[in-house]
Amino acid sequence: MKAQEKDAIVNTYVSRAMPIPTLPTAVARILELSGKKDVKVEEVADAILTDKVLTARMIRLMNSAFWGIRRRISSVREAIVYLGLHQIRSIVLTTSLFNAFPDKNPDFNIIKIWEHGLGVALVARRLSQRVGYEDPEQAYIAGLMHDIGEVLLSQYSLKEFEEVVEVVKTEKISFYDAEKRIIGVTHSDFAGWFGQNWGFSEEFVEVIATHHDLNKAALNRPLVAIIVLSDLLCRVRGLDYGFEENLEVSLKDEPAWKILKEYNPELQKLDLARFTLDLDALVDEVKVIVKDIYKGIHSD
Image (cartoon, rainbow, N blue to C red):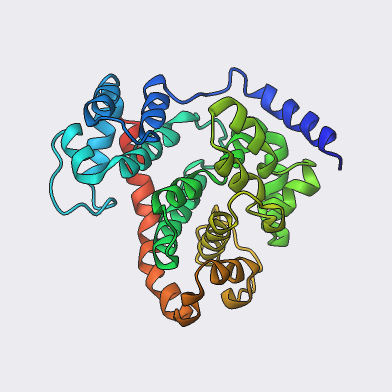
């Protein structure tokens, strides 16, 4: 299918969601500030404090077992000083994305998408640290957002998405392959729209667009490779929207792993079996964590 034809289909589906949900003004401002090198703590704190609901959610999340902070955080300023702007950005997006889209599909629980997204985010952060990637929080955010097109499809294209789910269930193939067959486009094809309308960076747009087609990645291949492997690890361990796929996985033979070995030759020494085993406990916690966060958000 030609790019113009795909764009036309994407625009058709996006039009169903109009007016499209947007990130709150305070969140957009926080993300803008956190990307600046010379920003002051007070500027970011003031931006957060303009949104009382966001402030309450952030404090709750930071003090949960999920974030793993070994001291109690009582104020936004304390959090920024203690965690740094990159982790604050991750927390802001985690709390905001969960609430950006309403749960409109009675036949598909949107929590399943956030379970997968959060699982990929956490695994991506851990993997990026082992790989020696320079910005683990960038990997976390990329993992959190990589399937955001799936959210759009699942909540605003109920009939088509129901057909996709049926194919996934009966044939045990991926959502990506089922979407191509039923809809003609996939959740990855919505990357450009989010880049234009939500202001995602080019690197994040690339992750969304190419995490199922690594060969097309050009801007930041190591970052895309980290998300590809993290996505695969989560799917193998059941964080896959609650549906089983027929997967045969050998990480050492994955093209994404080969890219990461080129990025850091020291990975030749990494015990992959031990590393993936270490992730099991992390993945097991995600389902409980997401339900707690989501329940807390919708009780505000």
